[in-house]
Amino acid sequence: MEGLEILDVVLYVVCCAIGAAFGMIPTAWLVTRKVRNGADITSEGSGNVGARNTYDVTGSKKAGLLVALVDILKGFVPIVVSSWIVPENFVYAAGAGFFAVAMHNFNPLLGWKGGRGLATAAGVFLALCPVAVVFWGVMYVTGRAAITKNVNVLSVIATLGMAAMLFGTPVDAEAFNNFLIDMMWLTPAEFSSQLKVFVIVISLLIIYKHIEPIRALVQQKQKQETQNDTGSENV
Image (cartoon, rainbow, N blue to C red):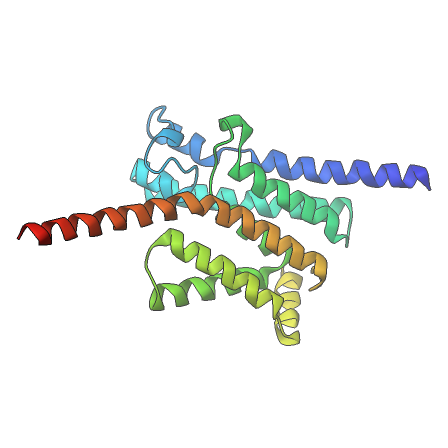
């Protein structure tokens, strides 16, 4: 029994290590360096190591799309591999998914700089709970139509909305999720308390990385309002 527990720990560490290894692949840094002859994406544009900044820095849609695709795979592949190692066990897959997103966001190879986790988290949820990606997309489109067109604000709105929708998921949505995941030959995660905790943790990783750009946006608007008020007083 003790030997089995040790094996469980070893397998869990292996799954987490696989997630971390994929998460630390600095896709945007490598692609930008190749396209822009050695440019360091962490010190250009927004400094974010992701698909959007890759496009902003390189001016290449192909480069941005490549980064987005690979970053999605960075989240998807570790879940699939961990599911092969330990079938039908959410905890092991969740460990791989958490470290994939965490290491993407805080990459030790880049001095703990990284992306904002959206693409990698999308890959994780595509493998574990694809209906979450559908919910996120619905909330993003709704927010863009009704609230704002700022990407960072929309990302936070969509992430919070996705989490809220998953917490209130009806049986029909769970069945749809299982249908989607069956089409990818994967094992669906039950809509359990474990999944809900996992959603909260991943959402916090995403939201935390969006705090700084949203703060900068607020400060910029406050500065513009101050300048407008000053200009009005001088008229």
